[in-house]
Structures are given as structure tokens and as C-alpha cells.
Image (cartoon, rainbow, N blue to C red; front, top):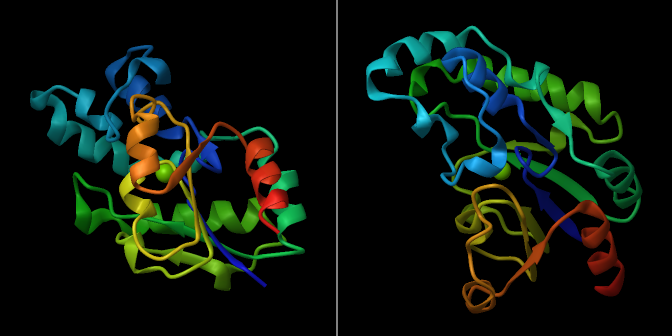
Length: 188
Ligand SMILES: [Mg+2]
């Protein structure tokens, strides 16, 4: 069976991080207003210390939504492919406090996708190290390394990446899980 590496945040589920930031800042930012990959960069410098503590008390995955059709598509694909969820868990602003975030990710995956065994979760920062047939991620640099098929999942922060750049990197843009399914069906 072919191996697929699937990213978690903004490919499987979305919205949790921004919701916590909005609660913290008492704002109402929408995803489409954010251009940077690290959403927390919108937090003013003088609030950064307070933010670290606030974030630590929250569970991102109690506040996320699954992307449309992801559950059905993964269930379908799990019968034909080896699915691996590859996700980073280091909290950039406070790396030593990352274990709780890791636990929340693990528990969310366990509860949400009963057909993906925990042995298939890969908690990793440098995804370039992973060698598989297909990679799906919303961060272009995470698609580096070995894979025959590389899919960039459209997200708030990657809309400005041009088709030329994607072509150069041998990457195909996908906007939703139906498109992924279609490409994989043609890939046979
Ligand atoms: Mg992601």
C-alpha cells in the first residue's frame, strides 16, 4: 500500500488557534484577514508573556472544526492507503511547555478517527525527513523531501503562493478534500 503523510492543523481541522487568540485579545479576527503562518504574530509585543500563560491553559482541539468531508475521505482512503498523520507540536513561543499541546493533539486524533491507529501518528517538526508516496500539507516547506505526489492544501496563509512557484517545487494546490480524492483516484 502507498503511504500518505497528512498534516493535521488546517488540513484536517481548523479554527481553534484563532478562536483562542480572539478570546485573549477580545477581538474578532477572521482567518482570511491573517497572512502569516504563525497567527500569534498578531499579538502585540507587550502582551506576549501573558499570552504564553493564557495559551497554556487552553486546549486548541476543544475549539476546532473538521474540514468538510475530511472524515469520510480519510475513512475511504484508509482502506487503500497507509495513512500517517504527521504533525508538529512544539509551541513556538514556549517550547518547554509543549507536552500538553502534544497530549491534546493525540487525544483529539484518537477520539476523532477510530480507523487510524495511534501507531500512525507522527509528531515531528522537520517533515522533510519523512519518506512516503504522497504528502499533504498547508505549509509549502513541509512538502520538501521524498514523495512522488505533493499537495498543498489551501489555507489563509498560503493563498499568495503563485502557480509558478508551486510548479517549480513540483507541488499541486488543492482546495478541499474532494479535490484530493479526485487526484488520488487519477493517480492509480
Ligand atoms: Mg498545517
